Length: 185
Image (cartoon, rainbow, N blue to C red; front, side, top):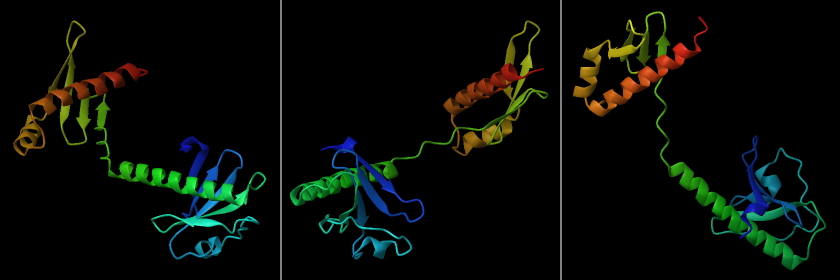
């Protein structure tokens, strides 16, 4: 399989799929959906010229038709064209499988948002928890949850557990000290 010899693309305006073969003989291949007879059927607004000897095409199991629209190098023999079209269909199947796997993968949870107010020395999480920071006489800092009632409700409601509380306290401290470090005053 010559996976790295191909670029698979999708048109921004039309959403049409195409492939570009990067090794000689280089070409552009249109991928027509089932029922589309020509590239013009798929894109009536596009003035598109099919390559002179691009009468050959193949269909894959999904009903897509692969046809060369442009040769970037001298056109090869008919048997080479057939091999190139089969290779394009095989590579397209790999691209399709990878896209389906990516779509099925769970999205990572969004990073928690902390808003830091250096005047009040607080870090406020987007879920409403507020952590207050106090500087000790020896220059060290302490932090504590300023609204434990919200914390208790989230624990009772199953939204948070004890390990979440410890992690959020660390995140609050990280956000606060990053803001403190970057404060120009």
